[in-house]
Length: 285
Image 1 (cartoon, rainbow, N blue to C red):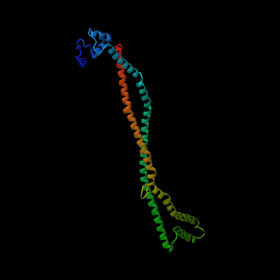
Image 2 (image 1 turned 60 degrees about the vertical axis):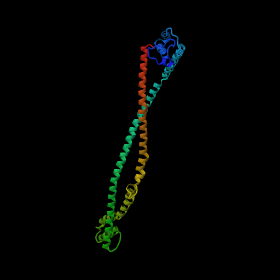
Image 3 (image 1 turned 180 degrees about the horizontal axis):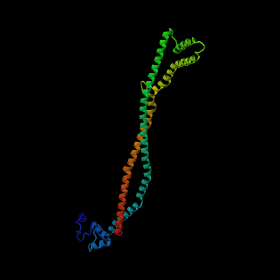
Image 4 (image 1 turned 120 degrees about the vertical axis):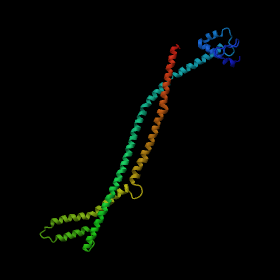
Protein backbone atom coordinates (compact mmCIF):
# COMPACT_ATOMS: atom_id res chain seq x y z
CA UNK A 1 0.00 0.00 0.00
CA UNK A 2 1.36 3.40 -0.91
CA UNK A 3 1.69 6.32 1.49
CA UNK A 4 -1.33 8.04 -0.04
CA UNK A 5 -3.43 4.90 0.21
CA UNK A 6 -2.44 4.43 3.81
CA UNK A 7 -3.44 7.98 4.70
CA UNK A 8 -6.89 7.51 3.19
CA UNK A 9 -7.51 4.00 4.51
CA UNK A 10 -10.95 3.61 6.13
CA UNK A 11 -11.23 3.91 9.86
CA UNK A 12 -10.55 0.63 11.61
CA UNK A 13 -8.46 -0.75 8.70
CA UNK A 14 -4.92 -1.58 9.73
CA UNK A 15 -1.95 -0.93 7.57
CA UNK A 16 -0.16 -4.06 6.40
CA UNK A 17 2.55 -5.24 8.66
CA UNK A 18 5.89 -3.70 7.84
CA UNK A 19 4.43 -0.47 6.50
CA UNK A 20 3.96 1.12 9.96
CA UNK A 21 1.18 3.47 11.15
CA UNK A 22 -0.20 6.30 9.11
CA UNK A 23 -0.21 9.88 10.39
CA UNK A 24 -3.98 9.70 10.89
CA UNK A 25 -3.71 6.52 12.97
CA UNK A 26 -0.88 7.99 14.99
CA UNK A 27 -2.78 11.17 15.79
CA UNK A 28 -5.91 9.15 16.61
CA UNK A 29 -3.89 7.01 18.96
CA UNK A 30 -2.28 10.12 20.46
CA UNK A 31 -5.69 11.62 21.12
CA UNK A 32 -6.57 8.50 23.09
CA UNK A 33 -3.51 8.51 25.31
CA UNK A 34 -0.47 10.05 23.82
CA UNK A 35 2.73 8.45 22.66
CA UNK A 36 2.45 5.48 25.02
CA UNK A 37 -0.94 4.49 23.66
CA UNK A 38 0.38 4.98 20.15
CA UNK A 39 3.21 2.59 20.93
CA UNK A 40 0.74 0.04 22.31
CA UNK A 41 -1.33 0.37 19.17
CA UNK A 42 1.76 -0.33 17.15
CA UNK A 43 2.23 -3.66 18.87
CA UNK A 44 5.17 -5.38 17.37
CA UNK A 45 4.97 -3.41 14.15
CA UNK A 46 7.77 -1.12 13.31
CA UNK A 47 7.11 2.61 12.85
CA UNK A 48 7.17 3.27 9.15
CA UNK A 49 8.97 6.03 7.32
CA UNK A 50 5.81 8.26 7.23
CA UNK A 51 5.34 8.87 10.94
CA UNK A 52 7.87 8.28 13.70
CA UNK A 53 7.66 8.97 17.40
CA UNK A 54 9.94 11.98 16.97
CA UNK A 55 7.76 13.33 14.15
CA UNK A 56 4.68 12.79 16.26
CA UNK A 57 6.22 14.70 19.16
CA UNK A 58 7.22 17.48 16.78
CA UNK A 59 3.68 17.76 15.37
CA UNK A 60 2.21 17.68 18.85
CA UNK A 61 4.57 20.42 20.04
CA UNK A 62 3.59 22.53 17.05
CA UNK A 63 -0.07 22.20 17.94
CA UNK A 64 0.64 22.98 21.59
CA UNK A 65 2.64 26.04 20.57
CA UNK A 66 -0.15 27.19 18.25
CA UNK A 67 -2.72 26.66 21.01
CA UNK A 68 -0.57 28.63 23.44
CA UNK A 69 -0.31 31.47 20.91
CA UNK A 70 -4.12 31.50 20.53
CA UNK A 71 -4.46 31.63 24.31
CA UNK A 72 -2.01 34.54 24.46
CA UNK A 73 -3.97 36.26 21.70
CA UNK A 74 -7.13 35.81 23.73
CA UNK A 75 -5.45 37.44 26.71
CA UNK A 76 -4.88 40.66 24.75
CA UNK A 77 -8.33 41.79 25.89
CA UNK A 78 -9.58 43.14 22.58
CA UNK A 79 -13.17 42.41 23.57
CA UNK A 80 -12.89 44.58 26.67
CA UNK A 81 -11.25 47.39 24.69
CA UNK A 82 -14.02 47.31 22.07
CA UNK A 83 -16.75 47.18 24.71
CA UNK A 84 -15.24 50.10 26.61
CA UNK A 85 -14.78 52.12 23.43
CA UNK A 86 -18.35 51.55 22.35
CA UNK A 87 -19.64 52.50 25.79
CA UNK A 88 -17.54 55.67 25.65
CA UNK A 89 -18.89 56.59 22.22
CA UNK A 90 -22.50 55.70 22.98
CA UNK A 91 -23.18 58.85 25.04
CA UNK A 92 -21.74 61.29 22.44
CA UNK A 93 -23.64 59.61 19.63
CA UNK A 94 -26.85 59.67 21.67
CA UNK A 95 -26.24 63.38 22.28
CA UNK A 96 -25.64 63.91 18.56
CA UNK A 97 -28.91 62.12 17.76
CA UNK A 98 -30.76 64.32 20.23
CA UNK A 99 -29.06 67.40 18.78
CA UNK A 100 -30.08 66.36 15.29
CA UNK A 101 -33.72 66.28 16.33
CA UNK A 102 -33.44 69.71 17.95
CA UNK A 103 -31.76 71.30 14.93
CA UNK A 104 -34.24 69.66 12.56
CA UNK A 105 -37.09 71.04 14.67
CA UNK A 106 -35.39 74.44 14.56
CA UNK A 107 -35.10 74.31 10.77
CA UNK A 108 -38.77 73.39 10.52
CA UNK A 109 -39.68 76.31 12.81
CA UNK A 110 -37.64 78.75 10.69
CA UNK A 111 -39.21 77.47 7.48
CA UNK A 112 -42.67 77.83 9.00
CA UNK A 113 -41.81 81.36 10.13
CA UNK A 114 -40.63 82.24 6.61
CA UNK A 115 -43.83 80.87 5.15
CA UNK A 116 -45.86 82.85 7.68
CA UNK A 117 -43.83 85.94 6.78
CA UNK A 118 -44.60 85.40 3.11
CA UNK A 119 -48.29 85.16 3.92
CA UNK A 120 -48.06 88.39 5.91
CA UNK A 121 -46.33 90.04 2.94
CA UNK A 122 -49.19 89.01 0.69
CA UNK A 123 -51.63 90.62 3.13
CA UNK A 124 -49.40 93.69 3.38
CA UNK A 125 -49.30 93.96 -0.39
CA UNK A 126 -53.10 94.25 -0.43
CA UNK A 127 -53.08 96.84 2.35
CA UNK A 128 -50.33 98.84 0.63
CA UNK A 129 -52.17 98.89 -2.67
CA UNK A 130 -55.35 99.96 -0.89
CA UNK A 131 -53.53 102.79 0.92
CA UNK A 132 -51.92 103.91 -2.33
CA UNK A 133 -55.33 103.95 -3.97
CA UNK A 134 -56.86 106.01 -1.14
CA UNK A 135 -54.06 108.59 -1.28
CA UNK A 136 -54.33 108.83 -5.05
CA UNK A 137 -58.10 109.31 -4.76
CA UNK A 138 -57.61 111.99 -2.09
CA UNK A 139 -55.12 113.82 -4.30
CA UNK A 140 -57.49 113.66 -7.25
CA UNK A 141 -60.36 115.02 -5.17
CA UNK A 142 -58.15 117.79 -3.84
CA UNK A 143 -57.13 118.88 -7.31
CA UNK A 144 -60.72 118.62 -8.54
CA UNK A 145 -61.92 120.90 -5.73
CA UNK A 146 -59.09 123.29 -6.50
CA UNK A 147 -60.15 123.43 -10.16
CA UNK A 148 -63.79 124.09 -9.25
CA UNK A 149 -62.88 126.98 -6.95
CA UNK A 150 -60.48 128.42 -9.50
CA UNK A 151 -63.29 128.35 -12.04
CA UNK A 152 -65.67 130.05 -9.63
CA UNK A 153 -63.21 132.80 -8.69
CA UNK A 154 -61.93 133.26 -12.19
CA UNK A 155 -58.27 132.87 -11.26
CA UNK A 156 -55.90 130.05 -10.49
CA UNK A 157 -54.49 129.83 -6.97
CA UNK A 158 -53.91 127.14 -4.34
CA UNK A 159 -57.04 125.65 -2.80
CA UNK A 160 -56.11 126.65 0.75
CA UNK A 161 -55.45 130.23 -0.31
CA UNK A 162 -58.74 130.39 -2.18
CA UNK A 163 -60.71 129.07 0.80
CA UNK A 164 -58.84 131.33 3.20
CA UNK A 165 -59.55 134.39 1.08
CA UNK A 166 -63.21 133.48 0.83
CA UNK A 167 -63.69 133.14 4.57
CA UNK A 168 -61.62 136.27 5.30
CA UNK A 169 -63.84 138.36 3.03
CA UNK A 170 -66.93 136.83 4.63
CA UNK A 171 -65.79 137.46 8.20
CA UNK A 172 -64.83 141.05 7.48
CA UNK A 173 -68.46 141.82 7.03
CA UNK A 174 -69.39 140.62 10.55
CA UNK A 175 -69.42 143.60 13.03
CA UNK A 176 -68.25 143.91 16.65
CA UNK A 177 -65.52 141.27 16.35
CA UNK A 178 -67.99 138.44 16.60
CA UNK A 179 -66.09 136.62 13.85
CA UNK A 180 -62.75 136.37 15.76
CA UNK A 181 -63.39 132.87 17.11
CA UNK A 182 -64.70 131.75 13.78
CA UNK A 183 -61.59 133.19 12.11
CA UNK A 184 -59.35 131.06 14.34
CA UNK A 185 -61.25 127.97 13.33
CA UNK A 186 -61.06 128.95 9.68
CA UNK A 187 -57.28 129.49 9.99
CA UNK A 188 -56.91 125.98 11.42
CA UNK A 189 -59.00 124.57 8.56
CA UNK A 190 -56.94 126.41 5.98
CA UNK A 191 -53.75 125.09 7.57
CA UNK A 192 -55.16 121.55 7.41
CA UNK A 193 -56.02 121.97 3.75
CA UNK A 194 -52.55 123.32 3.06
CA UNK A 195 -51.00 120.24 4.65
CA UNK A 196 -52.97 117.73 2.57
CA UNK A 197 -50.68 117.77 -0.53
CA UNK A 198 -47.56 117.67 1.66
CA UNK A 199 -48.94 114.76 3.64
CA UNK A 200 -49.89 112.86 0.51
CA UNK A 201 -46.43 113.38 -0.99
CA UNK A 202 -44.68 112.37 2.25
CA UNK A 203 -46.73 109.19 2.66
CA UNK A 204 -46.19 108.26 -0.97
CA UNK A 205 -42.45 109.00 -1.14
CA UNK A 206 -41.36 107.99 2.36
CA UNK A 207 -43.67 105.06 3.12
CA UNK A 208 -45.48 103.52 0.17
CA UNK A 209 -42.67 103.77 -2.38
CA UNK A 210 -39.94 102.23 -0.13
CA UNK A 211 -42.44 99.60 0.97
CA UNK A 212 -43.27 98.75 -2.62
CA UNK A 213 -39.62 98.77 -3.73
CA UNK A 214 -38.59 96.50 -0.87
CA UNK A 215 -41.46 94.07 -0.83
CA UNK A 216 -43.59 94.54 -3.97
CA UNK A 217 -41.58 95.94 -6.90
CA UNK A 218 -43.51 96.33 -10.16
CA UNK A 219 -40.80 94.25 -11.87
CA UNK A 220 -37.84 92.13 -10.85
CA UNK A 221 -37.22 90.40 -7.52
CA UNK A 222 -38.07 92.09 -4.25
CA UNK A 223 -35.19 93.30 -2.07
CA UNK A 224 -36.53 91.35 0.89
CA UNK A 225 -36.26 88.21 -1.25
CA UNK A 226 -32.69 88.75 -2.45
CA UNK A 227 -31.41 90.37 0.73
CA UNK A 228 -33.12 88.28 3.41
CA UNK A 229 -35.16 85.24 2.40
CA UNK A 230 -32.82 83.82 -0.26
CA UNK A 231 -29.67 84.09 1.93
CA UNK A 232 -31.46 82.43 4.85
CA UNK A 233 -32.54 79.57 2.62
CA UNK A 234 -29.44 79.18 0.43
CA UNK A 235 -26.68 80.12 2.88
CA UNK A 236 -28.12 78.71 6.09
CA UNK A 237 -31.02 76.27 5.82
CA UNK A 238 -29.91 74.26 2.79
CA UNK A 239 -26.27 73.82 3.92
CA UNK A 240 -27.49 73.00 7.41
CA UNK A 241 -29.87 70.37 6.03
CA UNK A 242 -27.03 68.84 4.01
CA UNK A 243 -24.77 68.80 7.06
CA UNK A 244 -27.46 67.18 9.19
CA UNK A 245 -28.03 64.55 6.49
CA UNK A 246 -24.31 63.72 6.56
CA UNK A 247 -24.27 63.53 10.35
CA UNK A 248 -27.39 61.36 10.32
CA UNK A 249 -25.73 59.07 7.76
CA UNK A 250 -22.65 58.86 10.00
CA UNK A 251 -24.78 57.88 12.98
CA UNK A 252 -26.62 55.26 10.90
CA UNK A 253 -23.32 53.80 9.66
CA UNK A 254 -21.99 53.73 13.21
CA UNK A 255 -25.02 51.85 14.46
CA UNK A 256 -25.69 49.55 11.50
CA UNK A 257 -22.18 48.90 10.16
CA UNK A 258 -20.12 48.96 13.35
CA UNK A 259 -21.89 49.08 16.70
CA UNK A 260 -24.53 46.42 16.07
CA UNK A 261 -22.21 43.95 14.23
CA UNK A 262 -19.48 44.38 16.86
CA UNK A 263 -21.95 43.83 19.70
CA UNK A 264 -23.21 40.70 17.96
CA UNK A 265 -19.66 39.42 17.41
CA UNK A 266 -18.71 40.12 21.01
CA UNK A 267 -21.79 38.24 22.22
CA UNK A 268 -20.88 35.25 20.02
CA UNK A 269 -17.30 35.31 21.27
CA UNK A 270 -18.50 35.42 24.87
CA UNK A 271 -20.77 32.43 24.21
CA UNK A 272 -17.95 30.45 22.56
CA UNK A 273 -15.60 31.35 25.38
CA UNK A 274 -18.13 30.00 27.88
CA UNK A 275 -18.47 26.81 25.87
CA UNK A 276 -14.68 26.38 25.85
CA UNK A 277 -14.53 26.90 29.62
CA UNK A 278 -17.31 24.34 30.10
CA UNK A 279 -15.51 21.85 27.85
CA UNK A 280 -12.25 22.27 29.73
CA UNK A 281 -13.97 21.84 33.05
CA UNK A 282 -15.86 18.76 31.93
CA UNK A 283 -12.71 17.14 30.49
CA UNK A 284 -10.39 18.44 33.23
CA UNK A 285 -8.15 20.19 30.73
